[in-house]
Structure formats: structure tokens, C-alpha cells
Length: 186
Image (cartoon, rainbow, N blue to C red):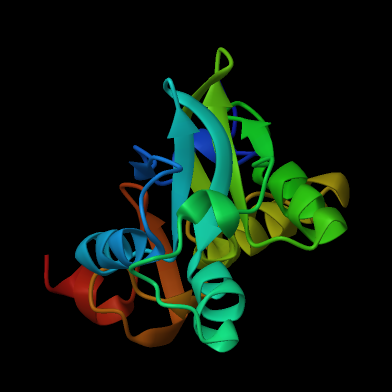
């Protein structure tokens, strides 16, 4: 009896998003929001009113719409510099759709919703971080379509999820890409 190969064919937005989204009120100042960005080490804050997302303020908004105009961040309200509306994607969508939406809208962040409620945010950086996995999926699908046998262990190039070093011999193990040294050091 042969075992059916198990191949992952999609990566969903919910698997990559940052959750929860950090939020602020439209009446907070650019300085307040900038301090939150520093505290949480993020580049954007979702602006909400009555728990509903109404916009987003990015580090770029603060730089271009306040600082570059010589406005005092402690006096600028985020409602005056936020981008609105915030564009969203459902958490069950494929990440390739998220990338397509971002490219078409020329934006770097999307709010993520589940049952029409904001549950997180996905960024260009999140998409770049999963590129090794996406390339592996694409490569495996191509091999299957070409009728090649699925190999038990396949190597891909990228950064090891354990030591963060580049390797041309990464293997996925327990959902993480590991280099030879980290696999041997188990």
C-alpha cells in the first residue's frame, strides 16, 4: 500500500499575519502613535472608532504628513494624517492574493478580517519572510505536474528559522526551515 504524498499547496493570510493589530483613536496625536510604534516595534497603527477600523497611520504618514511639513507631532491628530479607508483582506485568503492586492493598490499593509472583524495586519515584510516556503511550494507543484516523484527531503535556500544564517540546504522540520547545523544539533 503506497502512502499518499502530503503537500501543502497554499499559505493563508491568517498563518502569516500579525495579531492583534495595535490600534489608536483618531484623537490621539502623531507623537502618541509614534511612541506606540516604538513600544511594539511596528511601522503602523490601525485607527479605530467604536472598535471599527477607520484608517491606518504608518511611520511614513508621520514623516511625510507631519515632520516634513514642520508640524509638531504632539499637536497633530492622527485623524488628520491617517490613510483612510484601511484596505482589508479576509484571513482565509491566500497570501498570493494579499500580495496582489498590495501591489495593485501600491500599499505595504493590509488589515486582516475574520467574520468582518479586524483581527490583525499583514505587511510586505511578512510576505517576504515566507518566500522560501512559497518557493518550495511552487517548486513541488511543478515537480508533481511534471510527473516527478516527490522526494522525502528537499533542500531550499534561505535563512534558517533557528540560527538566522543563510543556507542552501534548508529542510522543513516541524514547520520551521532548518540548516544542516541546526538539524544536527537537535
